[in-house]
Length: 198
Image 1 (tube, helix red, strand yellow):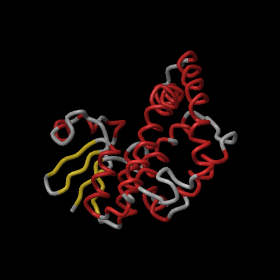
Image 2: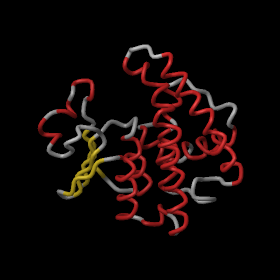
Image 3: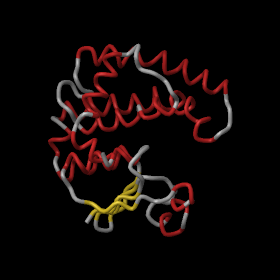
């Protein structure tokens, strides 16, 4: 049985959600991050970076949530990846969201919330980056229901989970109705609700 190390939120949600979409049974080892369980020798043997999530599939260890989601879909039901073109287009957008919206953007905006250390300059720079880049995705989603076009794929899981940072940063998406509708469509799926424990 697959073992998934990580809580039901943050980056770990990608793996939980993917497994629920695939209908694959797994054992969850949530790890208490606040207690540093992800930095203990037992876990570092699974993921030397000491980050969550990680999976153990019969002794095969894999970390990094996007890699995990892609691997699980490929292994258990490649149709969740879409066609070759959908897989490529979806991955393009999932990576773009992570690199152009999350890194240096939403992550910088939300950092003070989870560190308790004020950083007005970092928040302002992050907001500027997000506001510069989101119109690109907004336009794309005006013509496409999902990242891969008009079919839900694992890349939507990857992309939607990145937008959890918007909630943490208290960055509203009301000016981005197409992005908001896409997130709502994806989060309305039964597998998302099951992954969240709802």
